[in-house]
Length: 327
Image (cartoon, rainbow, N blue to C red; front, side, top):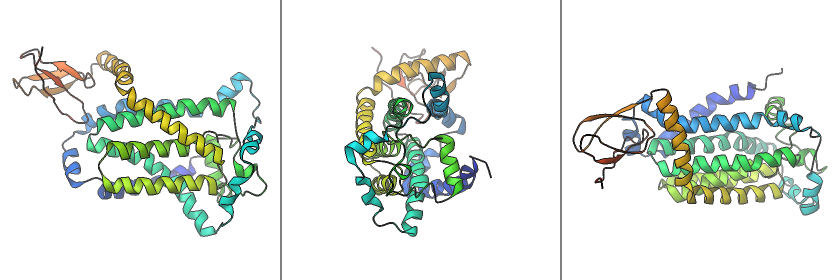
């Protein structure tokens, strides 16, 4: 059977059920009620820029082999020996207590819980209208991929399970379906340094801790993060150096996202509004001061009512009009 999408087809129904369960467990009732007032069209407009960003990352990741071919790089290039010079086989300690049950559990953590944390954290910010968290999360997400990608092109490091003799590739040997799907994204299994699982998980945890007050999800994020970090070492995937590199990348990416969010958003907002103008995408709202109906570009942000000169702020995900006096 040669279908790299088979794992996705099998996992998708399970993942959807996980998201539905997570919605009712982690999203407070008052937020669920407020979220229902947002129309589907407004929701789509609100997440469109983030969807475009995610698609850009998807195209970038899947162009890795093409870029290597264009640059004439040796597909068998492997710098794992330099990682071994740093840490030896210290990572083998994490397989000193291997058991079939633990392997199945941690494989589920690596494949499903990681995906759940990435996507549900994004959705949680959407549901709650937490724009600051959503924006920082997206910016940091993109930064992490943009920084990690050149390492995967020019500094490929093969997984521990196929490098060290005393480490078993537990995840890849669990099922041909799993290995086939993972090799579709990473044919040589050499996208190790820095660890994206570590970087993205730590970044998500930072945003959840610092930008939300949903205690139950904070606790879950902590447990999930520790489990994911342990799984990447136990399953014969990452080196300890990969994990450390991923953690440092997460901290730097989040710092940049938090500190320069406004500047980065100003640039991206101009691009989005230009597209909205080109395709005539409008949103109808009512001025909270003079009650006149206005048509605005959804991602314009701050605008002035032409009837009463009141200055307001609007975003399709929150449909909130923050009014202030015009100067």
